[in-house]
Image (cartoon, rainbow, N blue to C red; front, side, top):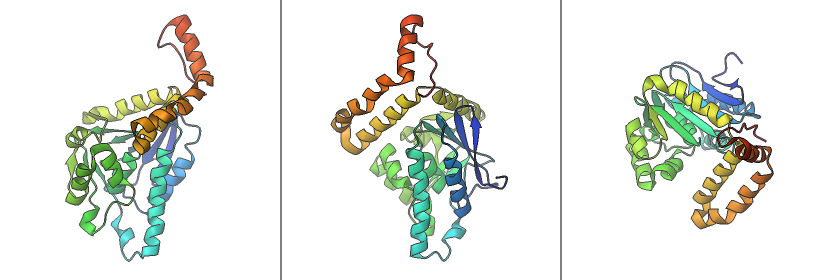
Length: 257
C-alpha cells in the first residue's frame, strides 16, 4: 500500500524489505504491522535484504506507544515484536541488514535477527531502552550476547549509549563496515549474490549454525548428517556437480531447488 511504513520490493529472486516512514522510521504499532505484512509477501524469494529510506535506519521505538500501556497490552505488543524477530530468523533463505545512520532499539533488534549485518562507517547503534526504564523486548539483548558475548551485551544495554560501527565490528556484531557511499550498492550486490546461490544449502548452513548455538559443537555434529544429506538429492547440487565435472568450478547456475 502507498501509505505503508514498510514494504516488500522484488528484484528478481531477491526480496527487499524497505523501512520508509520519515523522518525517523520509528517503530510503533503501524510499523510493526506493516513489517509483518511485508514478510508475508517474501514467500518465494531466495534472499532478503533489509534497508531503510532517509537519513536514519531508525530512531527506534515510538515512545508514544508506551504511554499508559497496561501489562496485558504490553505483552501483546511484545509478542508482535518477537514475531518479527522469529519470522526473519526462520526464513528459508539468507538475510542481510544494510544499516546506515542511526539504528536504535527495535531497528537494531530487527537487524540482529538477520544472518548478517553490513553497516556504513558513520552508522551508530544503541539499545537505549533504559532511558525510559525499559529493557529490549524484541530479543536484542540475547542476540547481542550471542554475537558479542554476555559481558558486552550487559554493557551495551545497561549503558544506554551509542556505539559506532567500528566498535560493533570489533565486537563481532557486524559482518562488514563500508564507506557511506558504498553501502547501498555493495550490500545490494551481495544480497543478489546470495539470492542466486544454492538456497537449500544456505538454509542448511543456517540450521547447522543454529544447532551449534543451541547444542554446542558436538550437538551440531550429531545433526549435520540429517541436515546435509538431503542436499545430495537437490537439483542444485546435482547440477553443480555435473557442471564442475564437465566445465570446472564456478560455472554452475542455481535455481534454489
